[in-house]
Image 1 (cartoon, rainbow, N blue to C red):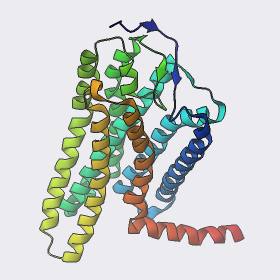
Image 2 (image 1 turned 90 degrees about the vertical axis):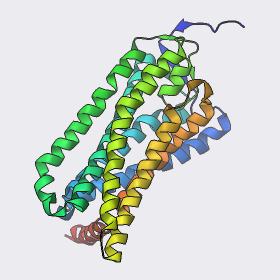
Image 3 (image 1 turned 180 degrees about the horizontal axis):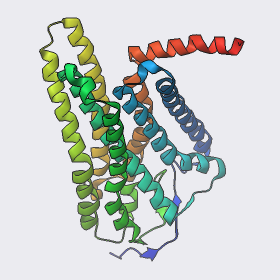
Image 4 (image 1 turned 45 degrees about the vertical axis):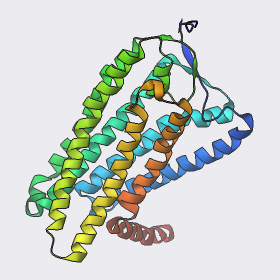
Length: 315
């Protein structure tokens, strides 16, 4: 069996969601619709939280951060697919490719940490309600958010540098719609076992495992507190909120585990591509629906805003 040709390259060719010419227009319209829906939903949440004083609380502050992250992840991952469908340009420079991957992974890491902070916020609110305003001051939750953003971008640097200084690949074609970690590593000339152990397993242990454990520990204590609530209506209300949050968290961690925590040799790029498509399109739409648009406080704030807007037009 002949060894694959090794080459040092300056750019990649992005295959995209599909390389069938007849599907480019339908794909473009579908992806554009999904992106605009994500942008619209999360922008609405950001607008409501920033303008309505009733939503100036730690929980909605973290939700605003989550909306920014959803918009950022969708923009970073889908913009090349949209450009490719319009112009047919599939070329992306090596530096731009790695920068896109770094930003995407960093935003994902920050999202995991923000969800951990949200879990802590709910833990304090439900398990220690009398001390909530003492513990979760504006200073505390602002510091938590800043730490999440800084740590999220720093954690990815070691893995990013490992790939940045390795420029030997077996092909220039990436069977994906953005520069993701697994498709890039599949093209590597290096030992896949070493790369996987260092980049994926090491990254999973450092980046994903700590926030995952802390988040689920918070919800374990929350569920224990819920079971002690005597009022059945109060128990249902809190339990409904927590199960909604856990649904999003489980989907996120489940998708990430499926994408990045399997042996690279067993990963089919086509399957990986469509699981990435689910993560970058479905989850950013589900987040505002589950976390905010089904929340009574947000619905009330939206109704107040809709009542005020016509008056502003008449003035």
